[in-house]
Length: 139
Image 1 (spheres, rainbow, N blue to C red):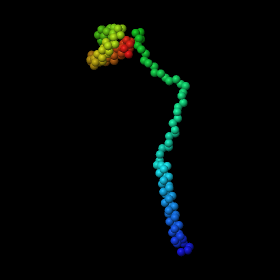
Image 2: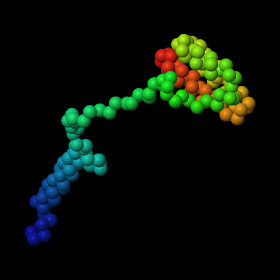
Image 3: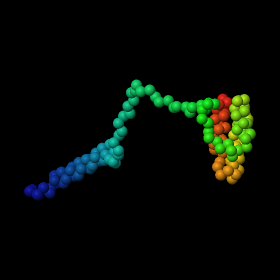
Image 4: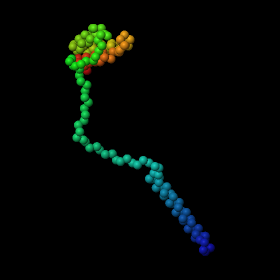
C-alpha cells in the first residue's frame, strides 16, 4: 500500500532497524564489559623511586653508662639493712655479675614485702642494682 510505508518493503526496513538495534546493544554491552562499567577508584599513579637525600640519618643516642662519680639512683637506704648497699657495692667492684643478678632477683621477689613494711616498692633499689650491673660490665 503506497503512501503509508506499511508494505512488505517497510517491514523489511523495520526488521533491519531492529537487527541494528540488537547489534548496537550487544556491542555496547561488550564495550561496557571490557572497560568495566562499575565505578572504580582511579588507578594509582605509578610508584616512583625515591631519590637519595644528602641528609645524614639520625642515630639513636645510647643511654649514658653509669660511672662511680655519676649520680646514682636515689635509694632510701635508711629503709634497708646497712649491709644491702655495702654488699651491692662490693659485688660491683668485684664485677660479680652472678651475685648482682641474684641480688636483683631477690629484691624483685621482695617487692611486696618492702611495700608493706615501708610504704614504697623496690623500684629505686632495682634501678641501683641495674646501674651496678652496667658498671660491672655485665651488659
